[in-house]
Length: 496
Ligand code: AHR
Image (tube, rainbow, N blue to C red):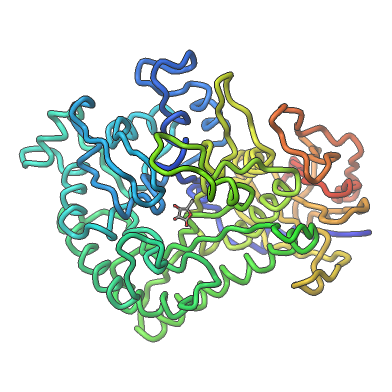
């Protein structure tokens, strides 16, 4: 098999926004309790924050943390999570049918973001609550002092405002599973009024309005149109969510779902632009893909989990090697939409459909950790339009699927071209990257992630990224062989 990527610096998609490397942390299962927060654990500091988790989060170079949900936020009273811990109420969390002790709340979260070098992306409850709770929360977080809520924040130990910039107007409000689910008309009006009032408190907020929770929703597309009719001028971002599975155990169809992902994003962009045209607006709306991942391994176990537990094992997918390939191809697809996808949150980060897992002994890194870590670390700069030729295959649901998925990023500051390439085939693939206009100087690094059984998981920490020593650079062209079913990265020093 053969594949070629031509890299031309004049053919740019866009600068990649740092917020594309963000994640969701929800009060769900063992994400917060046991995950981030575990007072008394040998790895925890005086705040109860697991330091091994903090380090792994730093290794992933995460930017925003979307919090506190997810479905959880639609039944959450944010006031339950502030003030002295021994006075905080224990409540039923109806979204996940668990016990919520509220020992971790707003102040703990803000402190944790500081430790991890991340920034908050705060969701407000537009399910069981609404405008009043949202405006009070903005006042509590962002108003300097001298009012009821800002003084309460100071009394609770935060003299300076949190100055939270990015806010989500609810979560998956199109889904009938959501607490306080609404139709598009109801939600659109509520989101508009909530945005207006939150901005009266703090005019500088960036707001994200809820879009479709999956492409399969009957309201997909029309939901966005109606909601944006009400909110187009109020918000900076429209949210969209996408999870994939391999329930049918068909590797090639699974990896081909990146085509669906691509079409999903393009479809939402088209809807945004149609509303823009209809409104004669000058403003272009960008996207917050604020939940994406593979999710399916834990469904059966979750169905059997007894309700009303503290920090139950929920959504604990153990990811295998084919999931890592799927996450790799989703990352490349995301970067192909860098012009419109400005926020993307891997869902989630710790223990719950997560790259980082904790147990009594410490942490272990899932297979999906590796491609995410590489793209987050080196996929910074300008995404270049991929001009690619490759052999193709047909799968159950997709035709003409390239075996090769590839993209180059130009990091101007480091004079570096970084190529991400995945071979979705079970044979090796002769791969070349021709650099047009650039003068290639040297290969800084060439790595490959491959050689594992597609069903292998990583509890024993056997997986690692290895060097690829069989790479040549002549005539401005990198040449190598991509191993069967492999995730690859090449960093090339260039003179421009
Ligand atoms: O990430 C898990 C759940 O998936 C979130 O709570 C919800 O928003 C989505 O359906």
